[in-house]
Length: 321
Image (cartoon, rainbow, N blue to C red; front, side, top):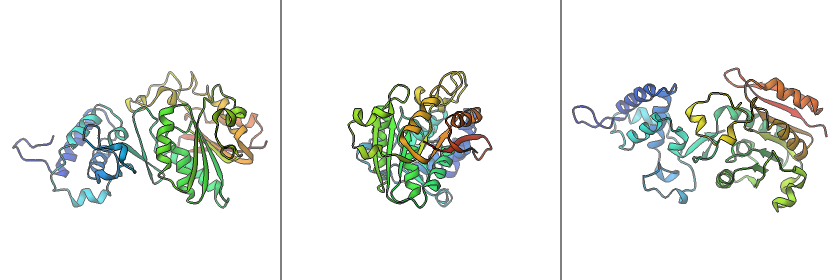
């Protein structure tokens, strides 16, 4: 793809057209979008974020993720020679490697987060839950947010970034790799006083967590809002290669996708304050069940929310304890 048949180098516009055809042939529905995104990331200053593996960049020394250039840049530079690395990036995407793994970052709520293989990739549909939580906290001085199953810090840091004022964040996650990445991402949101703790929601007791974690007690002050994007896909569900690239434990939760949900609700109730908010993402087939579980616990103002495609996406409620 890097060269035309007559030996001339492809320009950016030509390379994007060929990449779109290649990605479409690989079964990628968003072929045109991905082809342009890969080019936008590749044209970004490599000093702003991690380059693709094998390029020789010292990713550990980079303070911020690579951010895609403005879409208008593709128009302005349409006749420029396509970067030589573009063909490799397109080939990797055609092999169904997640785009976020290729570029090393993912946008979320206007913030670019570091992304690595082995950690759950932030999804745009989860931004709706972060936006709800930030609006719920509006006007509260120095609020505290708890992010259960926080992964690389996605939801909690998204809420903190949108809140745009001093805020305390406690992220709880099972994976050490995800916690390491969450710590790195937290440096991108200086207004957040963030603490990340390793715990297994399925077996650990939230009441014992401050002592076993060995962290300052203020990290476990009652939360003004608890958010969670837990594993919720049924084990029998067919998923795309991109979703399958995420850690299995971060995606799937038993036969019905609800295996962990009772424990998520228990943790939210234990760590949230009376009158505090809770927002939990779920599989689009389980919204009514999650709402019913909240009702059984006596929570108030239970509301089901839909994503931009009209699918049930998350449920919110107020704690009563």
